[in-house]
Image (cartoon, rainbow, N blue to C red; front, top):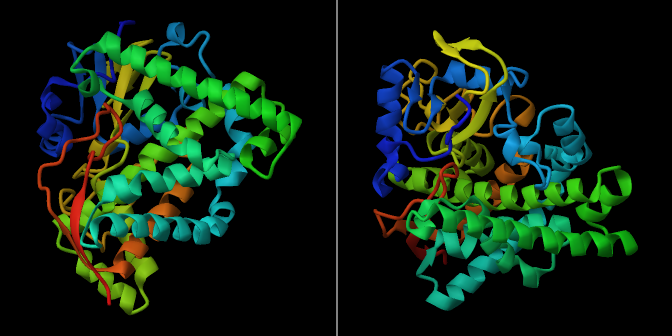
Length: 402
């Protein structure tokens, strides 16, 4: 079974409402055994928490090089690489994304957040905003672009490119050829831009991540270009959705005021941390990833053959009743909370500490600035991506604090 489309939408998630709320399907899949083979997509779907973590932590049996014949000539990416290539691409930048390394960015993130909210208030009179457009997408773009040394004037274009790279068929009315052309054009534009930046930094190094990687590592130009394209895209879409999804969860559960009160009593960071971790589990910004079997193996009693593709459902693992009590409840007091929203194993999300920091700073600023935040659209469109999860807009009515 060498032909597969594991990232295509399963038929159960063919409409917009199911894409936005796939959790009933997850529940049925858990009840049916936690794994199935999809003949339409020619791949295994893996839902069980134990099976998902087993796949993610066994890089020898389950390769991230899902389609070797399609990877020739493209920019190298740690997401689609196995050791030793993965190690070579990841190690040079890991230190820059550790919790201690990103923590000093908090004041700049807060300043950017306040500036973005000032702009939104000036445009609307301070009584409404779209959390996605006004805050959740520009903030991570600004942060990761600043780390890379990208000028502020270029960041809106980066948003368009990164969205196109991860887009799903909705953006082209199901036209897969048009979608692929759109993705390739965006990827080429990003590569061309970073090629120019790298050439400039080699001649005149600056105090940014691009210069440090060029000067301090032996990565090739192609490897550097692939690395920075990945960092930009990953730094955009996952954090955007983490910020929005956390507020979405708090609003649905009626917990915004509880977290706000914790802020006034000095417990903001702790309660926000609880909310962010539970949102990561409950509405994971990345719902699935893909692997390829390198040998015959067994998973949940099913025989996986060499070169079989597996669609690994992180979002479903985070709703597994065998691992989480009352998994369909959003519970701020859930402890422990060993979700797999950022993956496991060698591919655990490099930018997880930065994403958590940005979400905490952004949400704290919202709770400080507004005494009420009320969602005004109960039926937003889902993000147009087969693996990134969130909504395209999140309008809220707000009231400024005195």
